[in-house]
Image 1 (tube, rainbow, N blue to C red):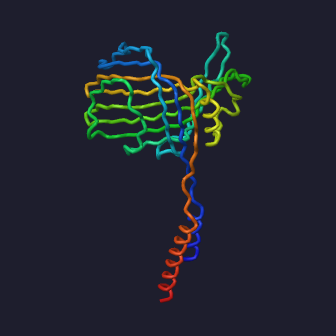
Image 2 (tube, rainbow, N blue to C red):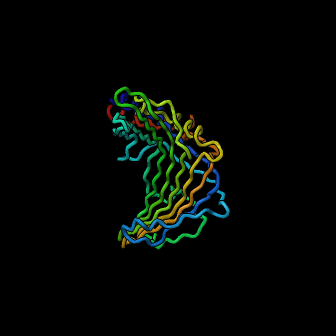
Image 3 (tube, rainbow, N blue to C red):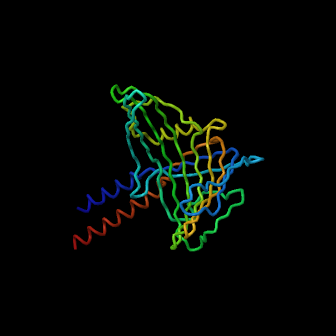
Length: 281
């Protein structure tokens, strides 16, 4: 019994789970600013104002995420719907969203949203509020095809990175800082009904970001702050611009050194020896 237990423990130690952190660095210019202040509850006409910045604001930022999904968060979601063209012929619209990172934490050290470089109006008190840090890295694929023949009409595939830091108070008021990046265009790919719901690898996602985000102006970037007071009054300030991915690096988690394994094995051996002595006694 002891030997089998020791063998299982040694096998677990010598087969560590590989993890990796991806760091995406991107740059560009914010060209548009939109702002709404103290919009009454359910007042959909309060859309604020959008202005073109006289002088574009340059940005350069790095964002890191680790592969994985928090418990209770779905890594893969599919949906389908059906419509008809003007002649009454039916088509299927198939979509798949795969999350390579989908984390929710409460550690302020995980926050990566930079400060807005323009004036904002956020009346919500963040002191003592519950903190949620939400990180999502995903691939979205859609395929349109004729229902009767399965012939592809249109297929698109993009990636997106989204990161939000949310403060929520007991009275219901909340404040959020966030940023997101995604391709400025939705490029087509060799999509069919057969591969619409395919699950792809981490390497596929990195290649997708490299292919769609590397050219000048290939990215749409949004940086924003929004709030909702306890009485339901809302407001938001955001900057939107274009940019490109400068670099993508993938760093594997550190693997214990041979000397560390030696110490761990020595400890296991000592435990086994002690257990054998007790059994003999």
